[in-house]
Image (tube, rainbow, N blue to C red; front, side, top):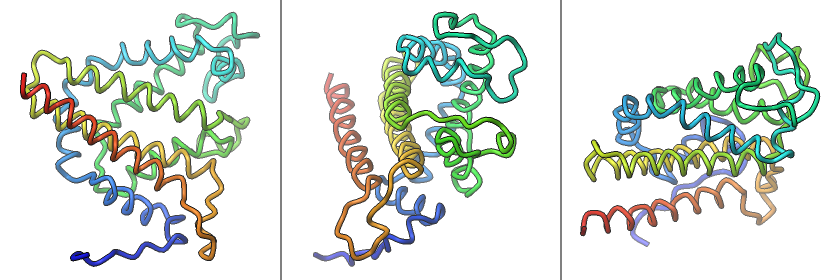
Length: 239
């Protein structure tokens, strides 16, 4: 092996800055990816309302996910639904939650990823779904707990919508579609790990255990999906 192997201490990955550095290096999330996301902001912004509607249509189509929206949401002061059957896109509490998702989606293409504060925000988004108060405004509020299975698959659903919107956009050339789709893929996989780290007991922190942590597995899958996405774009170029 010609290149020197970089040492990563399993214990060091409990530190957010170290973890993000490792994640970025592994999946090759570079300043070029950040630039692609920022350049895509004008394209993504008009899509946000439709993406939000699609997300909530999906969430409200299963009682196991819809049930997360029956308790009173932090900051919401209106009428609270008594069952999932009362929930719809027009329910005031759902409209309230949609506003938060809109803000989050915009942040994905506008954050300064050179600053730790941006990754702290994405980390808190993961943490707040575990029942622990990720943000100050939730410190004295009832616990919000959404199991990881729902968070993880929802991220995949959001990525699919974004990637489809990008690769079918009539005003973007193939190199731009390729750059934006790959950047979105990388970022969503990093966000996925910033959810998983708060749910999964990482045995690899115990240095003498020979286990492989979930973050490494998910990043490997993310890298594999990048290769597959590249193959699709290559076929577009051939056409």
